[in-house]
Amino acid sequence: MKFQHQQTLDIFLNILFDRYQDKVPAVKKITEALVAQGVVGSQQEIVNDHIAFRTLGVPHLGIASFEKIFLHHGYKKRDYYYFEGKKLNAYWYAPPSANYPRIFMSELIVDQLSEKAQQIIHKYTTPITGDPVDQLNLDDGDAIGRFFHTALWPLPSKEEYQALLEESEYAAWVIYNRYYLNHYTISVHALKHGYNTLEEFNVFVEDLGITLNTVGGKIKVSPDGLLRQSSTVADLQEAAFAGGKTMSIAGSYVEFAERLVLPQYQHLAPQEIKPEHRREGFETGNADKIFESTYLKQTRS
Image (cartoon, rainbow, N blue to C red; front, side, top):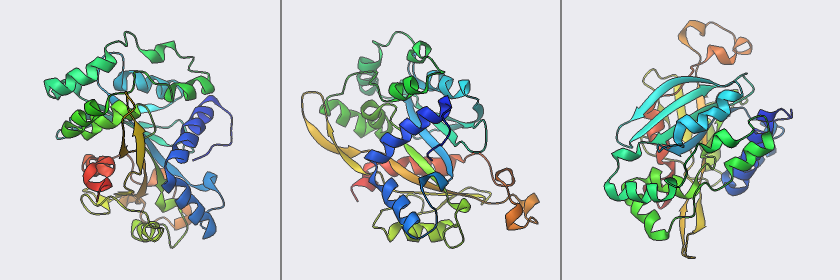
């Protein structure tokens, strides 16, 4: 995902990615193996399909706040998705040019949670009385990078985290991790032959000793069969809570996407196929299962 140019967008995306790969061992493990196998020459050659963020749907935060950063840099808001069981809204955003990743941004519908869960979340978010993004210089890449890694609320207690975990694992993840990058996504179809299908790539990843998300099968397939996705199970991290208590919690993970060629372009030779000839967008059914890459039933299995 690393970008060579030093435009504002490049700067803060690189800051995000550097911190993410430092905390998610699977990223470097997969990249180093791809380099060792001669599949890519470096991290820069891996095509990043999309990156994802999780937010809380409360005043001054959530998608309405967070999206301002990306809209300012030329991203276009596209399709809406609703996840009834997980109580989430989401949108995806198309990049200003093909060399940048799509953005998938989700938001917890906090007022659909229990009174107890709402009280915990509002305890931390109510003191935020204005949209923090409005205070940012959106043309300063370093400032945006710092913002992503600045705590907007104090650390929760271990007991509060566990209370949220019982009701909404998504809520617990966000209250602790905040705007930490949830995952980045390798475009498998852009890799060389032998690695460019999910069946092949998943075997490659599992041979590295990395566990895959098995909810709905290792490969999640859209109804039209043209969007296929897999992901690793989130790495556990030792988390310190308010008061000094600790416990292992889910961090972030890596996703893999295979976008197949649309029917109207099936006649094209492989060398003629461009990104616009492939399946675009996302799929609620796929994403619903990918979310569970950070869930206890996977991370503790």
